[in-house]
Length: 233
Image (tube, rainbow, N blue to C red; front, side):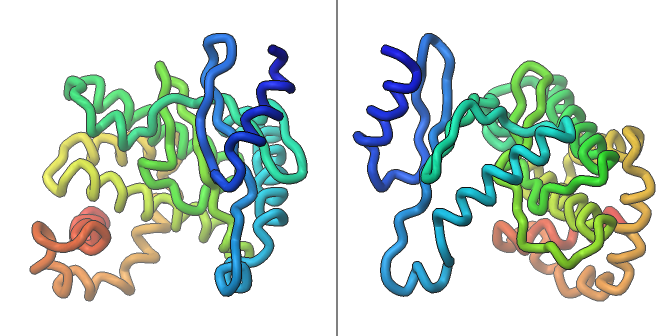
């Protein structure tokens, strides 16, 4: 069975399924289709097919700049196929790995983010669930594109803050692994952005005291806020 025929068969069998994985000749792939929206959700989210085309164009543009993005194997008007990039960093950290391997994965991710920023590119939401790692190879997935009016520097600052928020949210507030990972970002060319993030957050430091009671018992998004602000104090 040819790869093209395999894709046509999968599209026919998985109508309405937004994203799914499959294997072909021992290689894992992901197929993503335009979201099928109805009624009010179509008005709320907009044209799903246009959104898919934008995502394809974004990946192609980033790939042309040697950014760490998944390879598009093939695409059509209503779907595209990507090579698998391995487990997400969040999944790696949730598995039983040694502290040394955990630090290695975080350091690789931090360096990859600094490298992305060095190309004057940004992700938009680099949470650990949106970063894949496979034998030292880091790949960013699910780029966010809602912040077109922000400057390149503002986008990088936002990236770093959200990345650190995700680190503390996943690893816990006392984690030396998170601190070392942030330092690795700084040492890999991200020092200027780290300093600008610190400046940006000065006007938000009043939340340091407000968020203190939730530092250990808050929700998934609120609990790391205290530790992010503490890091930049």
